[in-house]
Length: 375
Ligand code: GDD
Ligand code: MN
Image (cartoon, rainbow, N blue to C red; front, side):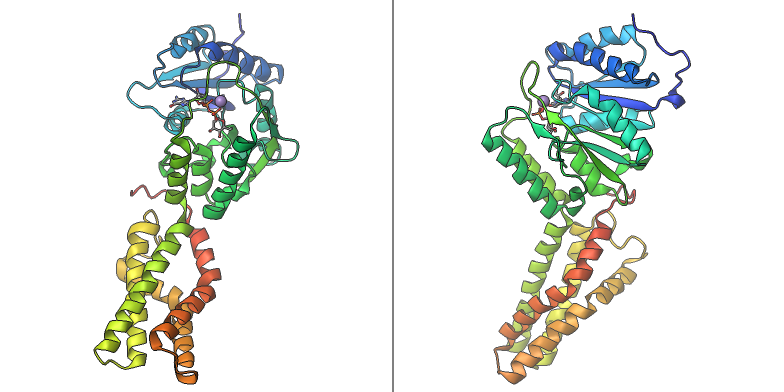
């Protein structure tokens, strides 16, 4: 029998281990034993393990419930209506009482021996997120084909490009990590698919993230649940998280609006300068509306109240780019008599580059969810 700490009240729980399961009846029993053994032999007694099972047809939750009868530190949550790894993990987070929460698979691909290391590093390094990483020095994968290796590396690079905040770890797709509970804002998480860590990294601001290397082992029993739709789902998730991608999409459409309006104005015989400024102004308003409704849906210019103020604020951030656009257009038009629309297009590109640095800073600031639950 396992000894249990009678003194371990809810508020004393130092670590919650969340284990999502779907058809892991052959693994979950020994997994729970392993986790308990590892934690106890490292002097961690006041922990809890939450198994979140999506009503697996193979009866995983019944095996886990048997274990829970032996040890009150084990809890089993059965979700009967929904399915999905990331949502299951979030459900575990909602129920967790530990100061720290670890997430790991049930199939022994994530070595339980690493749990105390993750916890120790979080405490000693005052980290908010500790990622068990396959790509940190000393880490790796066991028995992967070259194609799978390539896909995994490629996915990380894509994440880094589209969601820069994911670059705070070498393995943003890891399913094995530990977070400090108070560093999480659960209302900000809108998990889809199975990349819950990516979601957390993208939506949290100044959190301290560190990596601990590990080797991703072969599955002990059963098979992976991640099917062919996973890659597409991942890309959609990235696009949804990527303020940069949205920013560029909006910027591109704004450029077209800018040129379209200018062309129309010129055709109506409006002066070149006025046409240029009309184009610029329309595109500023256009971009503003799209950014507010689409790019920064959660928190656009959060501190400025009222849309008129925000519109003015947006004009302010556009000054350098607009002056550059107009200036470059004017110079090219006067000096080499370039077609004004082409001159304006070159102006827009130059203006974009001038704005690039400040836009990046803006994007970086805006990427964070500040608890606004509007969706
Ligand atoms: N509750 C629930 N619901 N659990 C699920 C579901 C689901 O829909 N799908 C999978 N799981 C559980 C599995 O039972 C397992 O314990 C864990 O989530 C991971 O699923 P696997 O099917 O074993 O995924 P994998 O091995 O291909 O990929 C894992 O490792 C990668 C590298 O760390 C996942 O953790 C990936 O997210 C991770 O990138
Ligand atoms: Mn697995």
